[in-house]
Image (cartoon, rainbow, N blue to C red; front, side, top):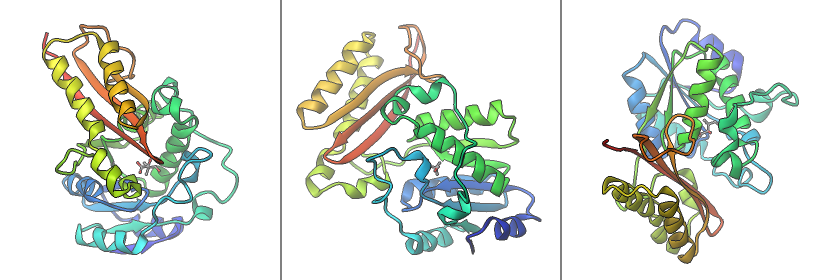
Length: 278
Ligand code: PAF
């Protein structure tokens, strides 16, 4: 496995590759990331992973500074997973000057995660486009846990005619249902015990929808109140249509239930897709 830090080394290394599969990450890898690599292997012959904590997608007061940086351990895991190239640039390599040219990802960037974290998706789309230009992959792999991020990236690829297939991979969960995330490492022992409650609330909504309940507002309110009463600060619990994350009407079949809430200082997100039968 090659460990590269500059764009010119990367371009040289990848110049003769025929089909590149790219897994962009911010590092601190867990089994969820490794699932992206496992899925990626079937789609090309050169697997490239980036490790880069992107300042542009963090808001003021968020966890950019304390985001875990674990380069050595990450590289060990990637090597075991058969990754061919690790690209771990420093900040000056990605942003040698003030980034004034940015990607503005449409209305999607203003709802849910976008509303809670203004500017977040501008930062994500901008770095992803830059990384796409650096790596020039045929396929890129993202985790469904960041549901809205997947939609933003797919829209960018479609609207800017990028010749890249986007592969979205299912969320990996711990046995108690908690979605794996690098941010889980911030949780205290007690918080870690409580953390699966977010997924449980989404699952209860899923069950209620399957049973024919269609009062979306009431379901969202109930889950929010339950989490808040257990000490969470809920940003949103939302039942949305899957394509633009707009409010569905009761006959929309393809839904996603999304949630974001803070437990102590840690903000967790999760989602479940639901298909309603007519
Ligand atoms: O999902 C992430 O880890 C990040 O948002 C990404 C896609 C690597 C961009 O920094």
